[in-house]
Image 1 (cartoon, rainbow, N blue to C red):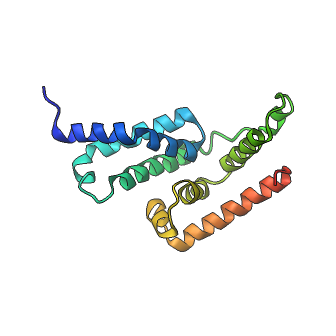
Image 2: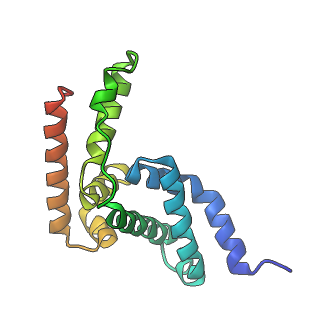
Length: 167
């Protein structure tokens, strides 16, 4: 049985952009396996509407927004049962690593402690390089709320980094 034209175009889109979508999901959640799950769930939902999505000016925006919604939805469902690990205890037991790796780990730990919307705003701003209006469209809030989330998120990261002596 031949593949429908929409399915072939969807497959081509996922083949071309799948690794970038996976990196975006990983930066959001910080876990490779969860990132794969987020992308897979989002792509399943997008596939159902692909004929409409591909006619938009930027289907990538629609797909990334679907991934972001999956991430925020997952965080709401799991927020009461899971808490981030405190990596400070493990750092004394690990062998001496390069300072860059230690700083990166500290930043990941600090980033994982942010509320989901603050983290999403920071990822969209600094990883995806989007402006406040574009971020507001993704997250579903005003540009002013985006600036507030970004300001609070960066301030919280600075406080954590200073407290851990990583400047």
